[in-house]
Every structure is written in structure tokens, then in C-alpha cells.
Image (cartoon, rainbow, N blue to C red; front, side, top):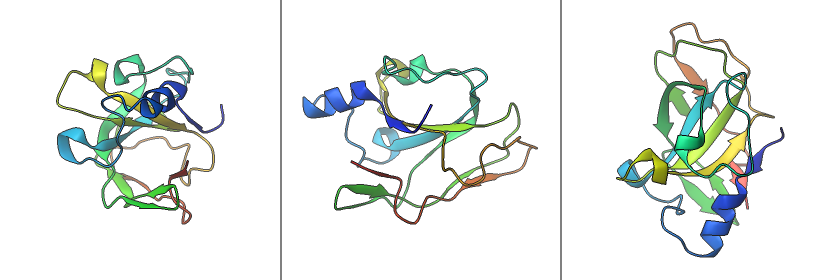
Length: 137
């Protein structure tokens, strides 16, 4: 699967539905999860975090976000003390104070990610975002 913005996030954003803004922080922030594609397969019908499987380690928030000419960028992400299955992809989602059945999936990325795939060894995994940004809409 090539990188993709989840179609149901696009649909919700076009309708100004709740939990689509990627500009929040903390409990309403944009997060990224490490994913084992041996367990999770991207589907355009997936909409919420609860649709995911194969999460490796603990997701982290995208911080220091910027928005320039339709491009989202942010500070590099460090996942602490990661162990478990191999990691081949990233999934971005918009968290909120509700249950994970309401956290909208934003983007799936499995190509052109420096350092992936990786097999965790209990240490930190740092994802360095492309110099041109995380995604351009």
C-alpha cells in the first residue's frame, strides 16, 4: 500500500465533522502510531483508531506543528523503549477526550519513511519527518 490520507477523514473534514482538526494538542492532538503490517492491513473503509491492529509501542503526539501552503509539518517523533513486533508503517490519528472509537484515522504512511522497517529492540525509535513536511493536502 502506498501512503494515503484516509478517505473517511477527508469526507468528515469536508463536512466539518468533529474530530477532524489536526491542529489540536494534548487530548485533542494529532498522534502517530507505529504499526506492524503483518497484523494490520490498510483499508479505505477504516475510520477510527479502534479499526487498527498491530500497534507497536505507545503512540506519540505530533508536536511543533506548522501549516504552510497546505503542508503539515511537525517536530520529529521519538517512541520510547519500544519492544515487540517489526514496524513497517505509521498511522496518524486525531485523538479526543472520548473513546478510541471516536479517534479519527488521518493518514497511513508506509513508503519513504526513513528508518522503516525496523525491528524494535527495547530502545527508542525516532522518526525524522521529511524536510518537505509530513503531508501536503
